Every structure is written in C-alpha cells, then in structure tokens.
Amino acid sequence: MNFPALMLAAWAIEAAIGWPSRLYRHIRHPVVWLGAGVATLERKLNAPHLSHAARYATGASATLLIVIAVTAFAWANSLLLPPTWPGFLVEAFIASSLIASRSLYMHVAAVAVPLSVNDLAAAQMAVSKIVGRDPAHLDEAGIARAAMESLSENASDGVVAPLFWGALFGLPGIAAYKSINTLDSMIGHRNERYSAFGGFAARLDDIANLVPARLTGLLIAAASIRPQAFSIMIRDARRHRSPNAGWPEAAMAGALGVRLSGPRIYGDRVSDEPWLNAGARDPDAKDLRSGLFLYIKAMALGAALLGIAWRLTA
Image (cartoon, rainbow, N blue to C red; front, side):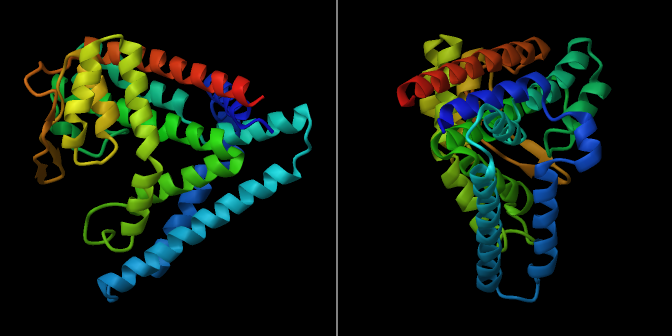
C-alpha cells in the first residue's frame, strides 16, 4: 500500500463530498464516536478529590488507552480490507472522515459572507461556531481576525497534520493523530478541571503537531509568494501561546499584511496575548476572503507535495 497515494485519494474524496449528511444521520461520524468515548472516560476517571499527580497519571493512562485502541482498530481494518482497488477506495473513504479541509473552508466562508455585507450579527453567530471567545465583544476586525486565526491553525490541525501522519503510516497513522488531536480539544485545557487530567494529552498533541504546524506555515508562506510571510513567520511564531499554532498564524499574518492574535475575551476573562505582525493593520472582510483563497493555494501546494511523495515511493 502506497500511503501518500492513499492520503491523496482520501483527500480527494473529502474535498469532493465531505462526510455525507445521510451517512451522518444514520451512523454519525468517527470523531463523534471518539468524542463520546473520551467524554465517558473523563467523567468516570477525572476525580476532583485525587492529587494533581494522580489525576495526571490517570489522564495519561486514559489517553494512551484511547490512542492505542483507535490505532489498533484502524490497523485491523487496514489488514482486513483486500489489496484491491475496491479495498483501497474503502480505506480511502474511511481515512477521508479524518480530514477536515472542506468543512474548514465552509465554516470560515460562513463567516466571510455576512461580514462582507456588514451583517455583524450573522457573522458573530457564524464565528462562534469555530472559536471559543465571546463573539458579542467582536467588531468587524475582531471577527475577521478570529476566523483567520481559526483558518490558519486548523489548516494544520485538521488538514496537514492528519495527512502528514497518514502519509507516513497509513490509516493507523491518521487515526492515531486524530485521536490525539480530539483528546487535546476535549481535555487539553488549562483550567481547574482539565489541567491535570488532560496535561499529558495536551503535551502529546504538541509533539504530534510539531512538524505539521511548521510545514503548514511554510505552505502558506510559499503560496503567498511574499517574502514577508516567511520573515514574519520566523520572527513572530514563537510569540504565540501555543508552540505550534503561531507558525501558520504568523505566516498568514505576514502574507496578508495584517496583525493576528493579540488580546481576546473568553467569557469574563481577558487573555492578553501578544500580537503577530504587530504594527500592521487590522484585517477586514476583504482580508478574510483573501485568506480563504490563500488557504486553497496552500492546500494545493500540499497536494502537490503528496503527489511527489507518491511518485518517489511508488
């Protein structure tokens, strides 16, 4: 099995049809099943009366259990499918469910459309579905910035990273990554409930995204054909609170000549984050549309890299 070819096929399926709504109504989605398992284990095992060390160890054990179980299930499916074209296509369809390039574009475009006609209420509602900050406090620049940051970060987490690990290890690789990323999104938060129990999952996700995040930043910068995209990325990426998200976000900021990150409000808490590309102007609706176009070009470059990897390993 040529893993880059499998990922190209999976990506083509996902970009063309996504996860069909009829299938979702009948069997939901693999990530929904995974999320239900994570939530169940967290409720049963994350006991507040335990010490920090005990909760960390319990969370680490639960994280490893889920990752190993998901990887083993994917590996078994890969072994059981026949080495034929129908078997290849079934495996590619399964893998396609773990890529999110189409849904990412649609969610961000759902913000860009009302923002372009100054419908702030609709844009706030749309952006609330992809970011955790309070949309009521966001003006046009805040909405555009939040959506652009989500687009940049999730281009790595939702597209490049799963394809990267899938190209290396096939269906088990993409499934293992998706389980790690889902664990981080559910329990990897820095708050009283999750900081101990989800600490291991958060660190594991940082490691899994180390190379893909930097690769995503390079794809965005290269697709923009603007030298400042590279220079801003190299200068500002490490200023981000995340060891990985700063790379694609700083590349996007430099490519479009806008500033991203910065202070934001979560509930009743103000998070005083540093700016990426500080001194540049705030983004607007036009910049968000430009960011979507740049995302398409960057992902096309990623597909070309997968194609090269396919030919080199054929």
